[in-house]
Amino acid sequence: MQVIPIFFSANDNYVPVMSVMIRSIMENADPSATLRKYEIIILHRDISLDSMKKTREMVAEFPAFSVDFHEMVLENIDFFVSRHITVESYFRLFIPYRFPQYEKALYFDGDMICKIDVSELFEMDMSNYLIGGVRDIAVAWYFLPEKKEKRAWRKTYEYMLSMENPADYINGGMLLINSEKIRQTYSEKDIVDIIFSREWQVHDQDIINFLAKNKILHLGYEWDFIPRWRWAKYLPQDLKDNYIEAQKKPKIIHYKPYSCWWCVPHFEAFWKYATRTPFTEDIINKMDKHGLLNEDFTDIVKTRIGWKTMLKTMIQEKLFKFLRK
Image (cartoon, rainbow, N blue to C red):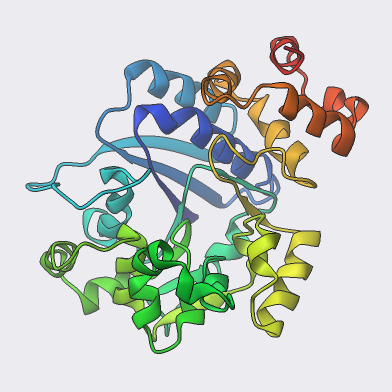
């Protein structure tokens, strides 16, 4: 039996979005692979019993999958956070140590959808690497002609800029983790010491790049595709070519919560799975709270996608009511 551990890190507010990624992973798993088991582990501190119940009921529809909510207990979690980042973001750094039964593991951010069987990613050869990941689209900022004038961004990306090759900096939202090799290289105390060694401006993502430097398996943009063409156009030609190909048929799409789920052509991909979760109404309400369900939103839907396609995809009547406000 092949066991594929799939990790997420979330607080209760993030569960509705995360449920969409979980749903997409389950629906795209190969049903003929009867000797494969997918173990979903959600790292958290405050997820409610109601959210757990709804998630478990959804996962129970797929016999090859299980889900476990693992409450993270750390002696000192006064980690540096800023902007939209929460302490939960750091939890992925402790996966190799808190789950020693796994030699390898997958980690995903919740604001994604998956269009392939994740076993394809999990089975990649990691013997010579600590981490597998995709170059962050923010790498493009390094190549912006006017980057020297962007002082605020320069502070944010100070670690990336300090790297020998900033273009190798990866996004932390999709990780193939060689847990065994990481345990051989660093102790859990090493990880904690590094966390507190400075105010990492991109938090756990900076730390991941620091820990895995020169031991990163760089994957194509199709494995963590972020719809940001206005940045991607500044990438070096080889990376830009890969990005252009990836946007035609991405394997994993990485959205920014509550802000770009209507990015053409991947609008439908998100709602296809969102409307099959028990959290559809929660997602809509959060979008409304963020001021996204307005005339500008519906104009984008009507002009770029068309009502016919949207109505076919968004199957819940309540969603239509919100979009027509």
